[in-house]
Amino acid sequence: MAALGSYLDARSHRGQWLIRIEDLDPPREVPGAADDILHTLEAYGFQWDGQVQYQSRRLTHYQQAMEQLLSAEKAFPCACTRSDIATSSRMGSGGWVYPGTCRNGVGTGSPPRSIRIRTHADPIIFRDRIQGRYSQSLQQDIGDYVIRRADGLFAYQLAVVVDDAWQGVSHVVRGLDLLTSTPRQIHLQRLLDVPTPAYAHLPLVVDAAGRKLSKQWGSRPVTRNNALESLMAAHAVLNQEPPVEKPATLEDFWNWALSHWDVLRIPALDTDPPMPGPHA
Ligand SMILES: [Zn+2]
Image (tube, rainbow, N blue to C red; front, side, top):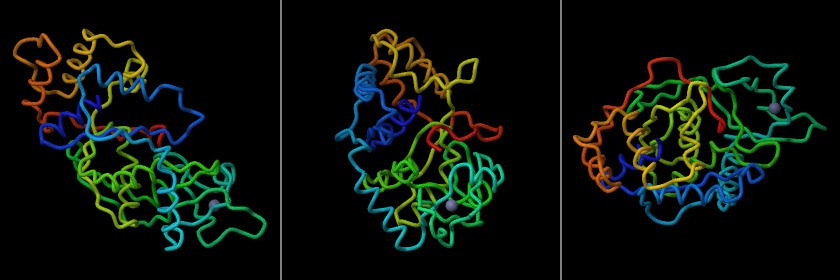
């Protein structure tokens, strides 16, 4: 779904379409998962530009950005444990709001565990191309947030901002589960003095139990036949103009979809934003 939307959006504007593998958490990666995703995309007829980028190979760049933020005092070391935070804070829209305990330094004898970004009360406001105006006060809703976790892994929020800037990404098209983390990324872009891309957050396909289906794309066996059916189904969820007659081949589908892409037809979510996904 997100792949289809971002691909159509990029290609119909004669833009490049880049693939990035978000493998920051090696123990949680299933061996071969990235290759499966790439093979699936290929079988569906997606064509990407340049080399596939792996976040696990970019750690020195995330480290540099973090050091820059620390030396400018935009970020600070935090010694709090999960339970320290849970006992001294309130619940925000996406979990416990960090109470600011270590903003002015950690106490003696408490080793720093994680690195957090300093937030402020002024709302971060942006206009999503599909969802419209979105505003969030990071201090109120999120609190000072982690860019390097206690287990030493860099947070998705930092990696995605560093990579978007490095690759010169001008348009981000992705699933609605990432809408609530966009203000954290915009805040980081401002602190690192890099451009903010245009954002479009697509509806997610969920099954009856509320599970997200798009992530399972890569795990199903793919044949040319169900590739076409899956693309047609995703195209319909994006509320794009249906082909006059059912496409006989993937090429027919892509020709139709690319020449009829209209981001304004995509339904916006009018209800409350969803809770942040696994990247939050
Ligand atoms: Zn702390």
